[in-house]
Length: 205
Ligand code: NI
Image 1 (tube, rainbow, N blue to C red):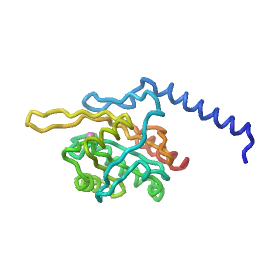
Image 2 (image 1 turned 120 degrees about the vertical axis):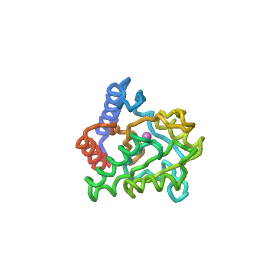
Image 3 (image 1 turned 90 degrees about the vertical axis):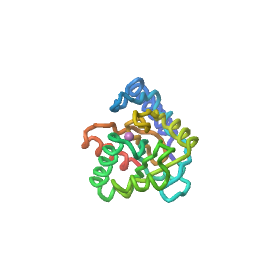
Image 4 (image 1 turned 90 degrees about the horizontal axis):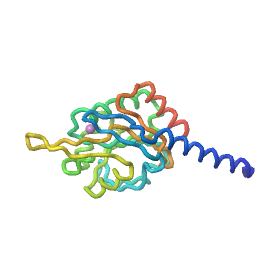
């Protein structure tokens, strides 16, 4: 059993860390994306939460299925011309650099394009980059709930040819094995820094 003062100081440390994270993250964009989109993180404790989606095999996949391992989760869409393919490619490179430790991490790609991306589309798309990246799809309501939980911005933008693109948050969210938000990988961030963040995430799990 831990002595009481350790429990108290442990609790205080968590509060101090949480407050520090709040102050550091408050009103600071985690990374502007092409097209001028950005996410403002107002409170780290507000990122993450329950979601119900469908995996590449058509099976239900919830936030509970990701617990037990830390998770890198990214929201995008398979028709994305720039941010998504770049990010997924870079995640595949990072998985390679992690070596055997990559098995200790969930990497999830959630498509916010519920009109065009179903389980088959996200399966085909993620397999282009790395089979360890799990594609997730959902209905309009499920995507609304998941993006709300993660404070992810996305907006459908009509194109002149009658199609559409989607502006969306470009950051990868890092969650610990209990599903708590611990940080982000920013779009365009130094790859060595991103690798260190993933290694720390895995080591702390
Ligand atoms: Ni994208």
